[in-house]
Amino acid sequence: MTKPTNPYAHAYADFLRETAEHQLVVLHDEGLYRHLRIQKPGTRTWSWDITTWPGHLATSGDIADGYMFTRELDMIDFLSVSRRYRDYYSDGAPSIDVRYWAEKLCGGRSHEVKKYDQDVFLGHVKDSLGEHEELGNEAQHFHEQQLALLLRLHELRGLDEAAMQERLRAYWKDELSEAELWADDALSDEQFEKLDAEFDWSELTDVPMPERSPAERAAEIRYEARLYAGSEHEAREWLHENSETFGEDTWEWDQRDYDIHFLFTCYCIDLAVRLYHEYQAQQAALPESTRLSSRVFGFLVRGFRALGRPRRRSSHPTTEAVQS
Image (spheres, rainbow, N blue to C red):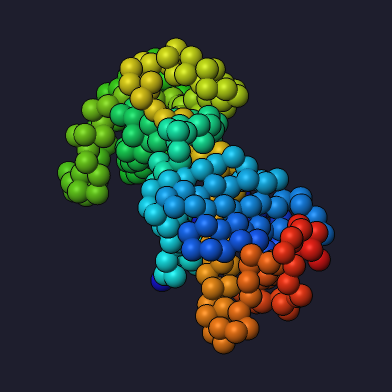
């Protein structure tokens, strides 16, 4: 089965590139009280910390800084992406319900993690035009059917496409009437019956033929929309000025999307949780006497593989010791 395309593929690709050499450092692990650090050895650039306590998970660091989530007693378990959704998208990204995670931010901050996105605005414009009665996909299909019928009619009259185009130009200049354009008096009854069976003659000939196709007119409007896509204020002003085309309800359009910082935060949490679960599994497989004490020193995990060995215990661990 073909996997779906990740709507945030660009953000995920950036995240993978920047965290390819990151390790998990377990600084504290006592029930629901945890302090996890994910970093590339020797640098804090693109590093982040995950801190949990009952009912809460907080992120801090060079990225994913300043977010706190709350929902269930154990937020590590709550924010765990099940195995079936870990490699969900075609680029290998997990299926994270970003909207749902945003709703679990403390302090009603869910609205803060969405920003105006010109691609969302332009997507609304494209979708609206696609459904437009005069400019949409159905209108374009109707126009193409008109042209096909007209060409077939001219062929039966012994005229080629160049002659048809010349007659159309005369029609658009009001030098040729509607009746003259669609004149069928040169056709035999048999020819007309075949033509009517192939096309819906009465419907197609009852609507004036526009000089510019619906697709051309829609493309022109989309081009103009890009000129006003620089800010949400400009976009909304432009929509208001073009309400005859888009209607009066464009104020309801949500032109925002989740900003890159929050998307990175979601990926940061997912990676930390997966590495932490691997660390737990590795520890559970060891005899109890040889298990690592995270209250004394850090334990490194890289890409689901344990690195390093227990060191001599110290009652005052330091960050430098953990990172060595």
